[in-house]
Image 1: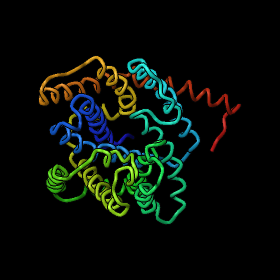
Image 2: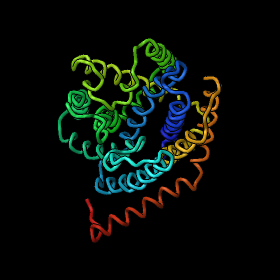
Image 3: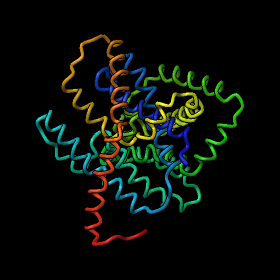
Image 4: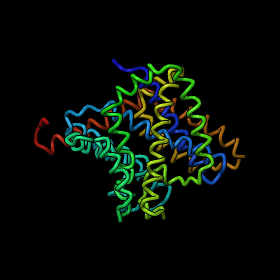
Length: 327
């Protein structure tokens, strides 16, 4: 039986993903209003999504899960790169090894599926995942390559959701006056981050400390701080989502289809729309556009299409193996 609260939460998060991408394309981080909204969104939306992904993850049939994510990553990588080539007029060889834009999440899921099994062999998987998220920043190589920075930066959320998610959500529901406490906490966090000399790349988790021009110790402390703020924010939002309308539940049930297809629509819009309106007008357009894109992409045809695409590639993988195997 599906957990309605999780679907509602996923629905809110996928809307924030689309809204954040819309804001990036049409308002940007350089605009003060855009920066205020984007840093609030990016502090929480992907950490929360990854926490829920870990919560829902079952450590079984690992090879089938890997094949499934590959069956989506490969065709959508091709679609995004070809559309980018159509508008940009050039084709970069880096897309042979680098996930395109938002597709890093599928690539990261492949890594988290494997890392979860390895970390659970240890006595302290969550602690170790946190240390890995700090230590990857010390790497002398470009952390953007193969999205290794993001994979390890967000790994603690996946592990925490996988191992303790059920217990945490249950206790949050039983917390007295939870709505009052978390509302105050979220407001305080939003106000606090507005006064930080925040750079967007800290929230993306894509670069090493050297790439961000900070000393190793300072980098680890700052990353720890952002991870902590993200954790508090995502747990607070879980308490508040119970009052959201049913629309968000339907979004959550179709979150994967929305995630994969909305980027293609935004790529197209960013090349055909050249907005010169005021920041407030752009904000209104972004809000309306996000609602419209979510409503379109949650139509059954989009979910059915990714299932068909996945089935074609899974069949191809099966033929490569000359027969089905089990874990």
